[in-house]
Image (cartoon, rainbow, N blue to C red; front, side, top):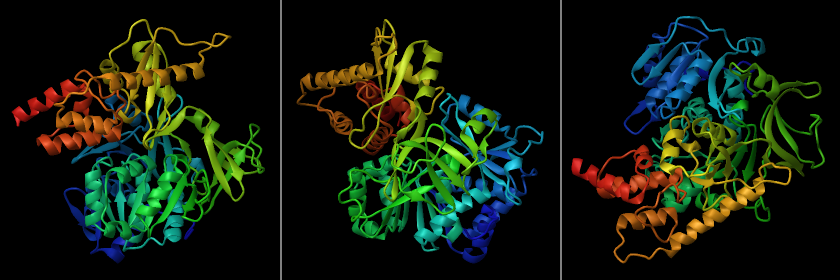
Length: 571
């Protein structure tokens, strides 16, 4: 670690002085040099007349958002990134939970109130350190939790990666993550730290755009969740020059399979490929593993890895006593990157961030792992929070929201991974089934799109154990049987000799042999990445503009075809 007291904005100011004429950030529309970036940040800073206060940013994927983030930090405040696609109910929750003073929304700066907000966890702050951001992550209690991180904690992670990977001004970073996810913190400040370029992808599921950027902008650093990269490498062929230019690939946020690791190494032959782990609660990452052709030849899994600089990893038993002999226990993280806590949630903070008599200040991850020789192996979760296609979701939150609005007993499951993607299944108990479209539209009012179950099944009654509890094993088996029945029914549909190109595309994307007019894309298990592929194909072949939400509204094959015809007529 280069210095005990670190400041994200000081690093930005230093970078501007050294690399002022170099391109700093590129989005779909524009590019900006470090000098121009500094000037715009300074102008915006003058409009912020408070200090050490929470400032919200409606975080669209653009240069403007980077300017706003830097201006908030330059003014001595801390930012709260807000996904513009979240339901209004969730946005209001974030603003109220943080007592946000003002919000940047595009060109607008809106003051919400003039009451000075007490700095959270001030008693935990080191001298001369400040809060950098509050990022909300899924909670197991049904509501998202705001993780409070400081400049010093974030810089500890960034300095480690800078030195370990020799990041420098010649590097060009690809920003795939949304700014309300902490992977973007590395993308933005990792590039600024060394004077590199940052290319912002408008939609991480738009593989055509990603391919274009990789090939045209000399990308050298790629930071991705495994599911996105896995899908991308299966669907898109990249030029040899682009494959050989990539020198750092970071995979995190989900399980990294051996197959994906091998494919990545083969695709990017000159690249250092890392699997990383940790938590939003510990400044992006705390543990990593360098994947090489030699160390995955005979392994059935990719190790969780070893702790990063100034961080420590422990395996604790139920009495919080450290395990060292291969016994499975809870993974705990200690060291310089552990967050201050959860904003406005003293109970959950005290439960998760603890002072251990022997080990010091710890974050209890809720993950399970074990020591295996010279590394740690990840073995699962203790609760219902899971990573699904790179997004952390709470099965209990989805279940609670469904019950609140429909009143039915229900359970939410994560199905086994198929073709590199994961799907959520909702099972609910009621005498009559509710139309899937109605369920999805209602849930979209309260949950993010990536939290919506891909498939839904109604049961007149759930299977029970001998003591009267829901038999979860039997219920999951029944779901798999229903999925198999649905697949068999699709195969029995007589194939039309005159099937349209559109339906051929749908069948290929959804990996089914047959489609009928009344088939629902969501009942067939379409996921978020497949939705973007369908959207891109429609736009390219029919020359119409549409949004993902349009497919939610017209999810049946024939309804979607009719909608496209209407759009073509309007055009």
